[in-house]
Each structure stands twice: as structure tokens, then as C-alpha cells.
Length: 64
Image (cartoon, rainbow, N blue to C red; front, side, top):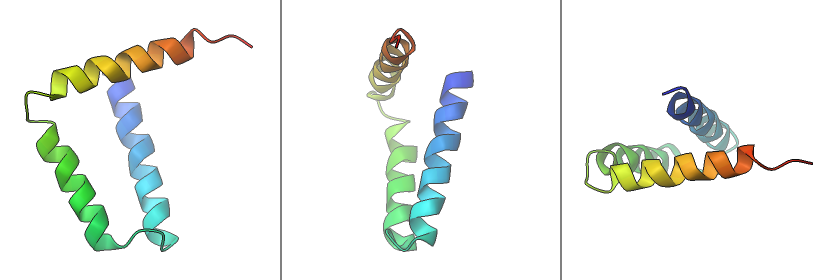
């Protein structure tokens, strides 16, 4: 749960920066938000969640 909240917060901040920097307009941003919202209710949501968790674990195991 903490991971998904962090990802949502991070993506929200990136979206706000893109809108304020005029890199993306409000219309396409709303389409992206709605796409993510509706994608979360499909059967692909568990697969995407597993992929993101796996990616986060892989990044966590990288040592410098």
C-alpha cells in the first residue's frame, strides 16, 4: 500500500509539473488520468501491480 501511494503521489507531482511547464495541456492530462483510472478497473490491473512491485524490488536490490 505504501508503494502504490508513493507512486501515485510521484506521478501526480510529475503531472502537475508538466501542466505548469506547458509541456502537456490540461486536456491530454485529463485523458491520461482517466485512462489510468479506467485501466485500474480492468483485468490487467493485477498484472501491472505485480510488474511495478517487481520493478521496485529490483531497484531496491541495486547496490552502489
